[in-house]
Length: 346
Length: 255
Image (cartoon, rainbow over all chains, first blue to last red; front, top):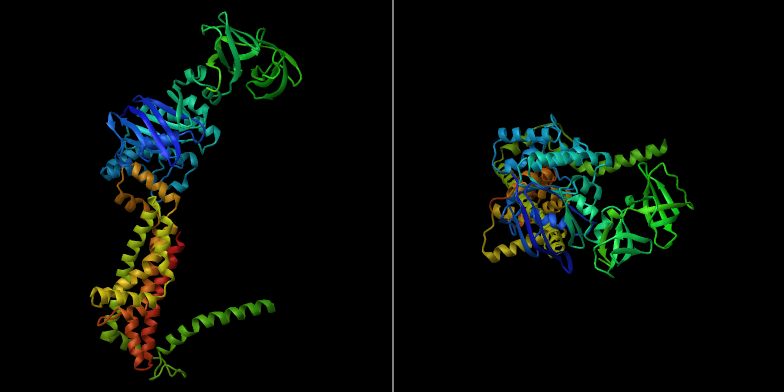
């Protein structure tokens, strides 16, 4: 069971505040879509609108071709894994998981069988008779997932589902979520503010900011070629270097940043990921180390290039390479991995 | 040591002050004599048996139980529905509505009784056990509403949201999620209402005519003077109140 979601020009107003302004998005059937953005960007509002917990002020929403505006949550082909799990504390796990089937008039034997299968799917075999209060946070999360999946929804909505878990558990749950999604085949829409989680799990990342979609696409594309400066800064870290095109080359305060096909004399912003600044000869050349942080897999340094001392750069150096504040190094930007954006606020 | 003695004495006096009247009442219901006053002349069950064989008292007792359980069930239903409705929907005047629903708790029973009497006269409704029950719903519904409102918090609202998401209609949400989640509060509200209705006198007196509740019947017994029989029936009232209160305590402690 799976369905495509079409969102066209959805707007949501709360009094004077505009939580969503004209959001349009198509999520393909069976896709794992992650809505990513800082708090207050409208991602949860969008999820609530898809799930039927909030009505859009304007715009259209269809799931599997059916118009959903005005349809109550109970009648939608969607179920939700809530941020706080919202398990029923007075019911055993099997009754929690079987609740949706009970509401659909399925008999006890059939729904218990299905609930057991779902508890097995999420790795909670044999815990049928426990109450939610006997479980750890991670286990409750799994029950919430099993409960939402038990009714074979076309679309599963996940509202910051891993937010309350510790880092290790979060990473392993990410893999499991992805594997479960592959197995059940439903369309998953997952809200988070954790970029790493989004990149690890998504088929499609939708980056939102201030009620609008900034960029969307496969994680690698969104990370490597961000559509806007906001996306470049929000998904990982980016150095922004101003540049101008002269004779088909990018001229920046740091030096020549390579060939470009952009029109002559346009002012651009070059986005450079810290991992693409490494030891070597070229732009920016000689730099002075200001700050270093040892991070295990690499050493993060902040440097001031001699060519433009005010334009600090972040770089990731191999751990074997010594760098202490005050040292001078020769660094080079790998220009084959930079992204060009129009100069200015964008 | 003396401090302990003083504390203990203080406590003994305090409890005596609270429970002595009841103890005296119960004791003299066993009085083998014509008057429930000292000295205690010996032990007999005569008065208790007389109470149990008194047709009018037994009818009044049955009436009281009917009114207590019936009006409490209705008061609880109304209070619960109002509390849930206000917790679930975002009404513009929710605070005001909530205040207006709990305010009657501070109005004296005499005023409520007189008001209802006037209203019923105006509406041309004759006095009966039904009107007594209405009066008791009026005093107990705000109590049930207050207890239910306190019990419904974010946890209930989140669970209700999840239930709706899984396909539950409003009736199913209430039946399978909200009510079971706040069951201890519902039981407590019901039992408290029962005890309040059970020994309520003024409203029952003002709003009844031929069929009366036990407190009203006892009051008319008292007009013909004290005798151990009134003590016996008082003991009976106390016993039932105490049982209801005990049930309330037990239900409250389970959580």
